[in-house]
Length: 140
Image (tube, rainbow, N blue to C red; front, side, top):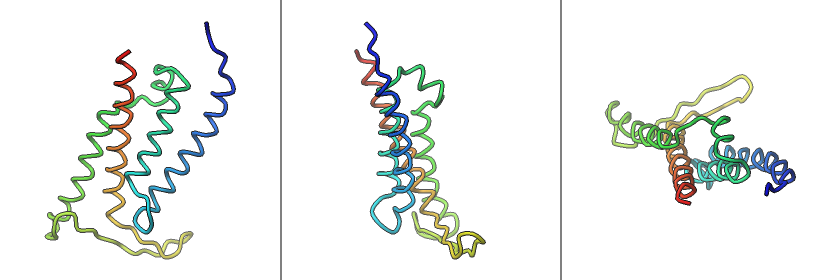
């Protein structure tokens, strides 16, 4: 018996967009207020899990053909790479660097190396959470 879940699928499309927007906001607000790579990645992973719950795995894999184990591994590589990059430049491990720029549209903007670290953390969290959920779903 096939369940008619048109309402669930329609609402999910809207909710996933809202969750992804919240995830981006949490990610970028992380170095000045609560948030960052961990919570931004966790929120983004919840959007991906919601898509897996409302659709079958093959449909989601067609739209997102990622191996989430590789996403997690690349995230760890990026996060640790930013720590070792500071050692290469003669600073202590995980020392943050910042560059202040005056961009035409945005005005005075600060670009910090911590954003790369947070991106690695976010990728690691996304990869681990989605891998765990997919492996739980395979154990039926």
